[in-house]
Length: 84
Image (cartoon, rainbow, N blue to C red):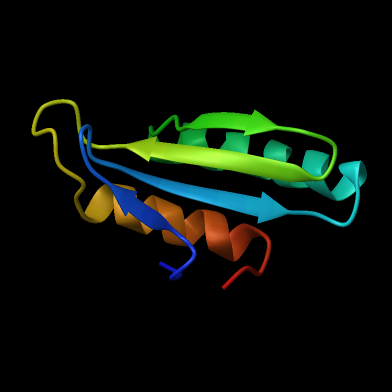
């Protein structure tokens, strides 16, 4: 998981902003992120504009803590677009 992810507390979560050259690239990333979400069974909050995407991955609802699944999902998202 890259250092661009910010770990927040109350409630515990991971946050990141991705920037894109244009809307077409953003849309491609969103489509691939949706497929990844279905595969992993994790559904982050996403907000986007023409050239950016904000993602929030919330902690496991049962434990209230971030674990390997959430951090691994963040890394998989980074890998989708070749982000560090």
